[in-house]
Length: 173
Image (cartoon, rainbow, N blue to C red; front, side, top):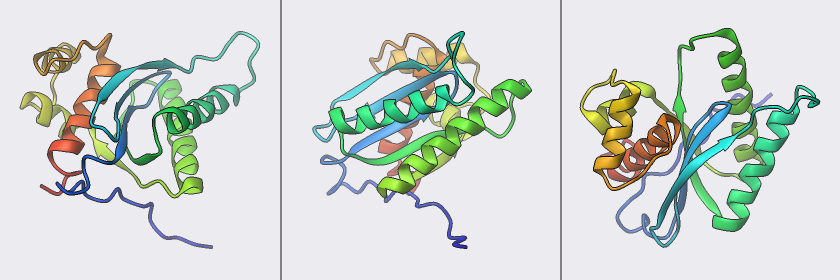
């Protein structure tokens, strides 16, 4: 049984940063996402993975898999993925959803050889606002101050994570 650790995204060096598509995700039922295209264009939004009334337990994760595949097909290929690494959840259901989405994401990335890494929430908040425990409103305000118009805190968090990845070369700078 292979126990090698996950593939960490290669640092975004000045030479390689402009021709790579990278994806940042705030995983949850309402997943915030931000994508920097190979041309440098940044787009963002939220995607809902709320199950329908008659959906089985795995449908949320199948829809997430299909969504990732479409992002890769339409905007990619995705060269690296960063996701918000949450260590504590408000409730059991949120923890279960996060774990399922993270497992789906990491399996999807492993199958395609796409490097991925989790970034602690405090690191993202500190980079965006200067405070590691910034509230949702501060994250939205920070994204707006940078010229973005996030619909909610999930999108703002994904934007902040993408900007962190770009500006710190994935935590190397």
